[in-house]
Structures are given as structure tokens and as C-alpha cells.
Length: 227
Image 1: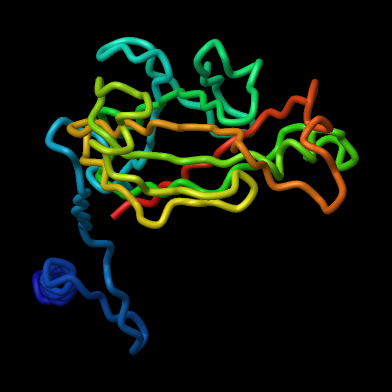
Image 2: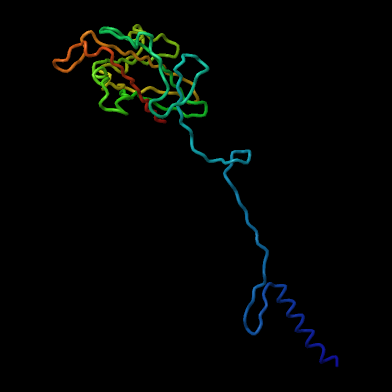
């Protein structure tokens, strides 16, 4: 009896040894037992659990009020925010000029960039190309000077400041761009002068008196680009 029981015990021992080794052979085929698994992950964060990879921001804002710390806003669609020219602007006679200014800076979360003034666009012509004000539009001149914020905006500005545009209102754009430091660290003021020359540009045979009672609304775009 003892001889009959020793063989099954021996087989059980060998099977247990195979199982402990991680494989079991049955009928000549090998089977691998299930094993523990593990994974590890990492992410690029900002040190507080938030996203650590992001794009920069470039945003310019404007101020037509002249105030140093208030009145900043954004106006990205034409015709934009209203600059109010000096009171004689709506009663020009040949030889008269009128003035207004705007200040630009980057927003507090913006990187640095450069800004360039493009030529004026007529708000009336955009909506109605046949507007009678077109005669006045072609007769007017414009000058633009780049100055520091708070500098006077009058005829003296064009001696003290840097003139970046000068010529017919319909075609004159800035000759150079201006740098805007990041996070609003610099503020660039632009002084606009609109003038009705003593001898305005008019089609042949059209008298100066034909300009009486006409009105235009010029709009300017500042094209800004990050560095």
C-alpha cells in the first residue's frame, strides 16, 4: 500500500514546483500564469497641478482719454473707439488744422511686439461709395507724430515728436513701426493732425467753395505683431 501512494505524492510535488516557477505544462503545452503589472505616468505642469505648456498672449489696448491709469480698452473692429478732435474740427476753413491723440500699450499678460499705423479708411465710403464727402476726403491732409504719453498734441508736437506719417489723408500710412514692451511697460502716444490746406486738392474746374458743408469720418487701423 505504501508503494502505491508514493507515486501520486511525487507527481503532486512536481506540479507544485512548476506552478511556483510560473509555468505549467499540460499535455506538452506551456501555460504562463497571470502576473502583476504596473504603470507610471508624468505630466508637464506649472508647479501647482495646472497645465505647464501653453502659448503666449499678445494683446494691445488703447486709451483716447489721456488718463494715465484709466480709460484703457480694446476696439479690434472698425471703426473702433472715438477720438475727439479739437472743437474746430467740425468747422474747418482752408488753412485750419485740428488735433486728437490715442495711446497704445500691451496688456498686463502680453508679450512685446511692434505696431504700425495703416492709412485711413473712410467710414462713410465703406458703407456708401457715392458719399458726397469724398470730395473733402481727397482734399484733406494728415500728419501723425509718435510721442510719449502725456505729451501735448498740437502743432508743436510735430517739431518735438517723431513724425511717422505725412501727406494726403486718403493715402498716408506710417513710415515705420513702434515697439511696445511686454506687460504694458511702455506706452506709445500718437498725435493726429488733420488739415484743410489753404489750396486744397480738387478736381479740375471744381471751386474751393464746393467743400462747404461736407463731412467725413476717418478711421485708422494699427497693425500690431508680436516679437
